[in-house]
Image 1 (cartoon, rainbow, N blue to C red):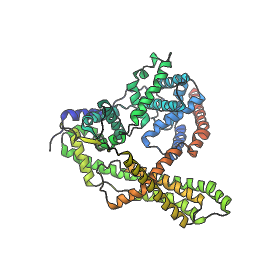
Image 2: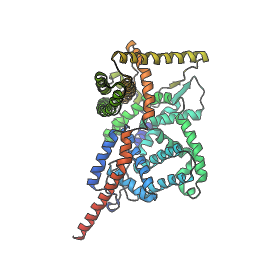
Image 3: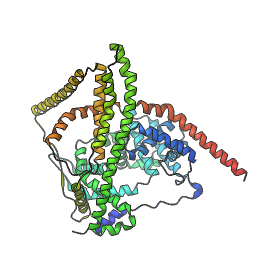
Image 4: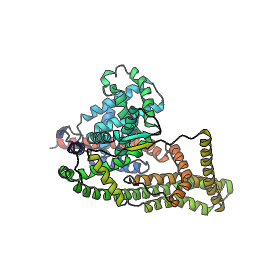
Length: 523
């Protein structure tokens, strides 16, 4: 077995070695009262239960949510920054008693940039929503050190950028490298479009990081920002972007496993990298642990979704289905109502049961990819294949066939519901939840298979299942995207409950500080 490149192993060690942050004096640290933190943390747990976001995106989403609320209540960026940092600490998105009080000054600068551009009134509502996301990412990177992540992505990008080729289409070399860079971030760190927008903004507008040069006269920057957003969106929505992600994913999964293996015992990491056999043994153990963790996460997600669907289905049944059926038919079809209540959570329950742990061949492929990442020969060349273009007649026939497939599947569902004596009200609700829940279950399974890099075999059963499920999943994605902005529960939390609750916690903390001060006067 060939040894690894010493230069590459040293570069990787730099990327995974913990960064030592400067010590903050005891008296200059931000501290939040434990009682306030418990209340705030409990609130975040409840709120996040009805807002399906990946765990690594929750802190960024909380920053944007708090920032929007504070901008309505307050205009002074210094005051907003202090409230923002303290709320994040109280909700345990940041450690308590570790951050310097001066960090709020740096946060205030980021907030002031957003406020300055907002006052210019250049751009639409969606533009400022995008800008809010970018500023939230910038604030998160300020509050949470991302040195290791950046170094790891740099290592990954340098190893794969020259090993990805595009066949079947012409693509500029600069655009190819950009798409590989974005794919590295998406697959290695699960970065969303807001994170990638901030990365590209720093490259396209270096002045963004030097606000002192333009805050007094921001109009030119505000106007340039419109074109830069358009340019960034074009890069993020490149038609080949999903193919680039699928191409680099096997290497990204392997590198993540390798990072976990080295981070488990940092003191022994250098010695492990000198012996490929030892590294393989550690990688196998870590991989099997990650497989089981992914399976547990899926089951937890399925249970959480099942409970959520039970509650929402009951509310929808009693608020919509039952009244409408009484209005139209003067009766309620109990069997149809029972099916509508039980089918979505039952589907989610079986999704949690049917997930399988990857096999030995998947682990062996991980080991092979790691060997390539650390070898002087580099990784094998992988191709991004562009599907050949069909003639106008061919495209028309394919679209007609695809439309016919939709009609057949949903027509079959309609006939089944008629046979079960569903009313039009209960049938619409059934089809709606069938599509949305099926798509959600599909996403859960994809998340659970994040460590699978060996493609499964196409069988007659899998092809038949794809044939049946594709129209339902496509409709579910469309419905999910359409209703994602209309979450009644989040509206209740964010607009009717959060502001007064957080104000109460602020007053409570001030009271605790006052009591502590009076108590110290007695000593």
